[in-house]
Length: 294
Image (tube, rainbow, N blue to C red; front, side):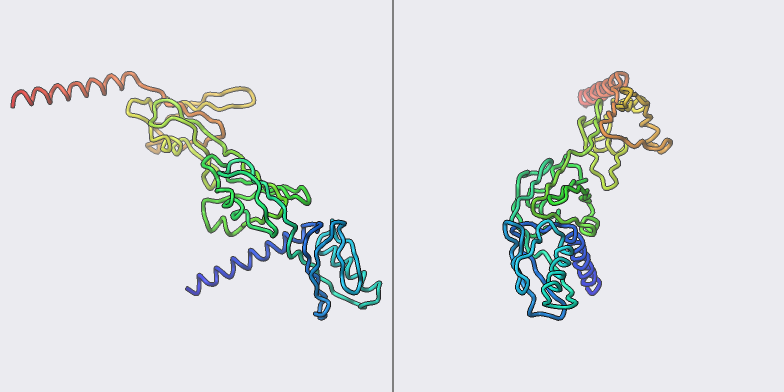
């Protein structure tokens, strides 16, 4: 129980640290609510809303322009103003974004409910994706976040492992855009139970021939597992590679890792089909004869 409590405290501390570090890269904008503190001077603590022209009306120093500045840069400007107006000699000022102006976060791509969602404070990427209905089955787990203020793009990996997903959670700010692309897809054709396309959505972004054959319900008894072909698109055109699925299944050859848009083709064997058909007919005839005898 104590270990769980420690882990919870560690996670909350980590999330707070991420939020603080990310906030320092944000730029203050009109409509934002900022908190101004001066060390050892609680009477100068104040919260003000940034006006449309980008200024903040502060006690003791009046109007000061803060829009377009980071919280650290705004603190430096306020500190300089306090010294210039001879309010304090050596003030230590900190500025914190308490609330960002209400803006829409756009969630685009492979989510169940793409659209815009209004937020006023930073939210985790997991919460925003949850509001958008979560990822679709065909979603790429490498989610792109584009910052509204700087245009910076960063990638967050939505891991299947809950501990990993929570350990490095990214923050989303008002005005940001989230793009969820379609995951890389490979195709299984031919004599398998469920031919079709299958997304590469494993935690390590890798999918092998054996794995995708298993996802397709395995090869049928009438298939030629010794003559499977891998068709791969290259800059010089399609390339066909022989795959000895029969030997891979027996562990006599290493499995083959697939790439996006690969096609695994499992051919049908007429000889096996005839043999299985003949065996079925023979079994049915024997059963009928046995029934007549009795």
